[in-house]
Length: 161
Length: 278
Image (cartoon, rainbow over all chains, first blue to last red; front, side, top):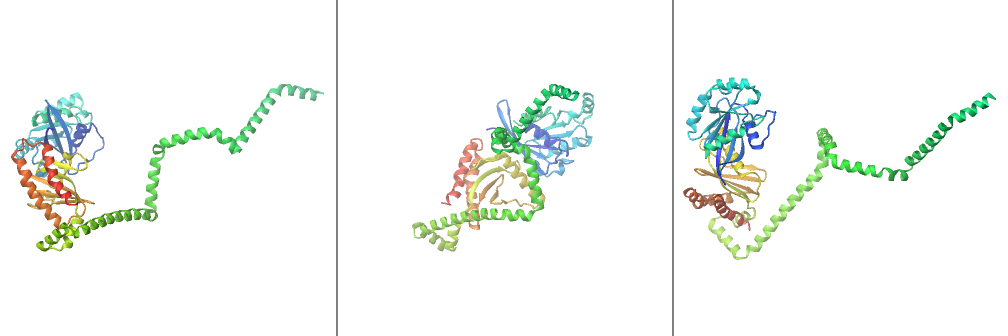
């Protein structure tokens, strides 16, 4: 039995947090948009170099800033996945401030930034948008076709061991 | 003369057609006879009907499921009173049966208590009642209506991670239950801004979740049945013991404690609550 780690998913509403979890845990995607109320909990066990990590994933309802989310949902988190929508600049315009305040609240929790919905971009648009994203080290992924979804969570799991 | 020749010629030319007509007429008559006579018709269509019945049996839900559901829904919506009238006797019987069963159980327990009345245990109860300043009836009733412990969860505050658990029925993933319970606790705390107050109970029909908050953990005990003040007090004492005897040891030796060991300790401690039923 491996160690259990609390992982929280943060980001604006509609960026695809729930879809990412659904794709990652159940390998499913739905076109239907249903807003998350409060929080949803899922679990996935990942094995990295023989170490087992039980990720207890808290998919928290989206807000324009994480500061609007009650701290009690975030407290004790071992890792964070911050999701943005590549097509909506409003979801990442203040990402630098978000990262700073998250690090203040959870100084030991690694953060993986995920740029979602890349399936909606052409190759050319992809390069253009990625070059204009503030900060670096994003995992570009698509909850719809599953591209890099596993990679994003695996990257965080690696930092949790 | 010409007419006769014409008739002969007609006979010759239409001989085949006439024969075919006669054959067709006799076939039609035979078919008509079969169709009109049930005994003759039955063996001929029985096999086809059997196949059809089999097909319908296999595919009934797909073929008619939606239509029937819609029709029942419509029927219930349009004639609620009739539906209630129709269901009332069935529901009434079910409720009656349930109450009867519960009363039978209660009666059995009362019988057991009466048997004990003049036993050594009976005298112990009387002495307890005299010393404790409570009536003997109250002590006996406490024993009769004891709730039943179904599950125990030991959960870390904030992270919502499950430290240990004990359950009689393996239902949902316990890690997820622990997370969700923590989220509910957090939600209540934020929604009502109750300062240092904490969520202490959740009731769900016959289930009661008793939450006991410690500094870095909280314990959730899931009960079925009626819980009175006496039992609650007994439970609080047991939780204090549990904290001292198990949790503090666990905190001091986290690394060497396995989840299974902790589960055994939880089971040993809280099984005492169910043992009290006997």
